[in-house]
Length: 190
Image 1 (tube, rainbow, N blue to C red):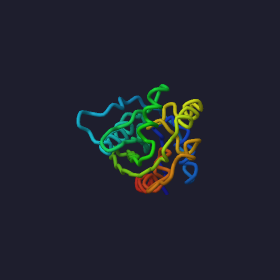
Image 2 (image 1 turned 90 degrees about the horizontal axis):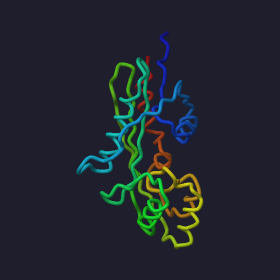
Image 3 (image 1 turned 60 degrees about the vertical axis):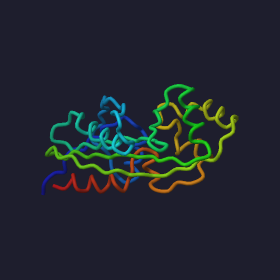
């Protein structure tokens, strides 16, 4: 009976670790990768999510291990929203999302121990209620948005503003569990 390969998560996200634990998966190691997350000229949100997930899986230095990586992109049409890192970016994102639906794309990549990379994409539609200025101000004051794609965290205070989700909730949090489990099942086979 052969031993299962080591599993490396190429992400420092505590949300991704918690999501993996939800399906009974514990990585042997976590390696944060440093990949330029800027979109290429003309790149669509779905292609950006897939490219970044693959780039992160390939960037992790983990010889002989299975590497799991993901990237989440929030978009309104073809417009890619930033991972908000200041109040104004978060405010602009929330104003754009207010009263409309948008798409969340999460690319997942798994690099097998032989170097073969497989990817999957989860696409989820999320609708926000029309936000008042006071609601936007309160959410900005929470600081929960910091570093989050689209300037919000579905699993936190922003949940009170979301009227519907069509697709994978776990993908909006940062890791589509069905797609991830499938890719890992294939890559972890002895």
